[in-house]
Image 1 (tube, rainbow, N blue to C red):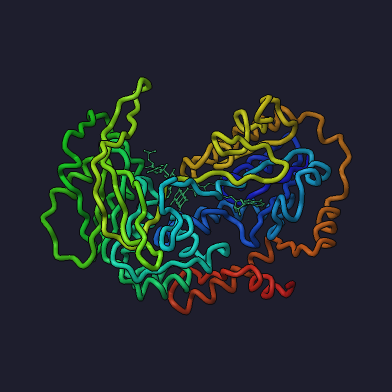
Image 2: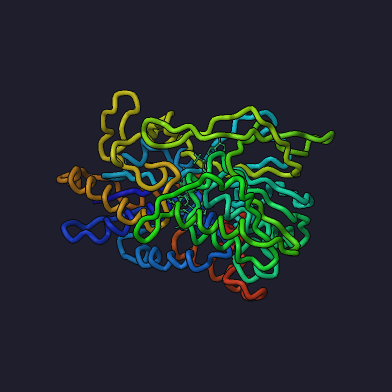
Length: 451
Ligand SMILES: Cc1cc2nc3c(=O)[nH]c(=O)nc-3n(C[C@H](O)[C@H](O)[C@H](O)COP(=O)(O)OP(=O)(O)OC[C@H]3O[C@@H](n4cnc5c(N)ncnc54)[C@H](O)[C@@H]3O)c2cc1C
Ligand SMILES: NC(=O)c1ccc[n+]([C@@H]2O[C@H](COP(=O)([O-])OP(=O)(O)OC[C@H]3O[C@@H](n4cnc5c(N)ncnc54)[C@H](OP(=O)(O)O)[C@@H]3O)[C@@H](O)[C@H]2O)c1
C-alpha cells in the first residue's frame, strides 16, 4: 500500500506512525511538506521558551527512520504537485496541512501598519520562512493582543520576557535583535467574554505571573460575579479563575513591565495616526447573554473605551487554506470531511481514498498530544476502507521524484533535513541555544548544494 501524507506536523507524523506500525500490511509512506523543514507548528509555532514541548520531535524522528518512510520536503501541494497527480501515484492520500490562514476581526482599521495577526508575529519570532521579513515594529510602548487563548498568552509572554532569557532558546536571531531593542512595556490581553469562558490552560496562565520583570494586572471588577462551581480535581475554568483572583489580589509592584488581562471587551475600531500606524484601539464593553445550549455569547453594551496602544495583534484563531482540488468547507473553514473521510462539501458524498487529520480536519483546537489518538482513528477508517486497494498497480515510487525534478523542484529528503539541522545546532551553540534557525528557503537549498 502506498500512502501520501501532505504536511509534516504532529497530525501527519502520528498518522504515519499508525500506518507504519501496521502488522497486517506493508505500507510505504511519502510525507510531503511545502517547507524543506519538517514538524509544522512544533518548529514554527510552539514558543521558543517552551523547549521541552519541542522534544516531541524525537518521536517523529523514530517514525522518519523507518525504512518505508520518505520525506519530500520543499514540495507544495497545489503548486509543485496536483491532487490528480497524487491520485495516480498513491493508493490513499492524507491531508495534514494544518490551519495556515487567519481569522479576521472584521472591524474598521484592521490591517493598517502595526495591526498584524499574531500568527505573523509568532512566525517571525520562530524563524518561519514565510514571515522572516514581516514588519514587526517594537518601538511602541503598549500592545494589545486580542483573544483569550494560549496563542495570545504566547505572544504576550514573548513580548515581555527579558531577551537575555530568550537568547538561550531557538528564537530567531532577527527577532532576538529586535526584542533586545524593544520599547514595549505594557501588554493588554483582551477577552470578548468573561474569565469563565477563557480558553487559556492554567499552567500557561500561571506562568504569566512568574515573569521577573512583569506585573500581571487584573481589574477585580471584571472578575466580580464570576462563580464557577467547584469540581473534583478542579476544572480548567476553576483553576484559571483562582489564578486570575490571585493576580487581582497582588499589591501593585514596582516592576518595569505590566501585563493587563481584560475581559468583556471587544475591539470595535483600530485608530490610525497621521502616518497610518496604529494609535489606539476602540473597545466596546460586553455583557454575557446565555444561550439555549448553555454557552454564553458576548453582546455589546454600547459603552466605549479607547485604549492607548501602538500595536494590535489579533490572536483569534486560524482556518485551513484552500488548496486546488481539495474539497473545502466554507463555513467551518476546514477540509470538508465526515470524521476524517474527505467529502464533497455540497453532496457530502465521500471522496474515495482521501482523508484528513489534525487542524485541517477539526479547526484550530487541541494540543499536540491530542493528534496521536485522533490521527490513529482516521487511519482506522483507512484500513477499513482500503482492503484490496494495493492490487491497483502504481507507477514506480521514484517516478514522482523524477516528475518533481523535471519541474525544477528541489526535493529535500529527511537526511538533507538532518544536515540542515546540524548546521542550525552548530550555529546555536555560539549563543548557548539549542539551534539558530535558518530562516530562508533559498539559503537552506544553497547549503544542501542544490539551489
Ligand atoms: C502559536 C502556537 C503555539 C502552540 N503551542 C503549543 C504547545 O506549546 N503545546 C501544544 O501541545 N500545542 C501547541 N500548539 C498547538 C499545536 O501546534 C497544534 O495542535 C498542531 O501543530 C496541529 O498539527 P497539524 O499537524 O494539524 O498542523 P501543523 O503543525 O500546522 O502542520 C501542518 C504542516 O503542513 C504543511 N503544509 C501546509 N500546506 C501545505 C501544502 N499545500 N503542501 C505541503 N505541505 C503543506 C505545513 O508546512 C506544516 O508543516 C500551538 C499552536 C500554535 C498556533
Ligand atoms: N502553550 C500551549 O500549550 C499552547 C500555545 C498556543 C496554542 N495552543 C493551542 O492551540 C489551539 C489554538 O489556540 P488559540 O489561542 O489560537 O485559540 P483559542 O483557544 O480558540 O482562542 C481564540 C480566542 O479568540 C477569541 N476570539 C475569536 N474571535 C474573536 C473576535 N472576533 N473578537 C474577539 N475575540 C475573538 C475567542 O473568544 P471566544 O471564546 O469568545 O470565541 C478565544 O478567546 C488551542 O488548542 C491552544 O490550546 C497551545
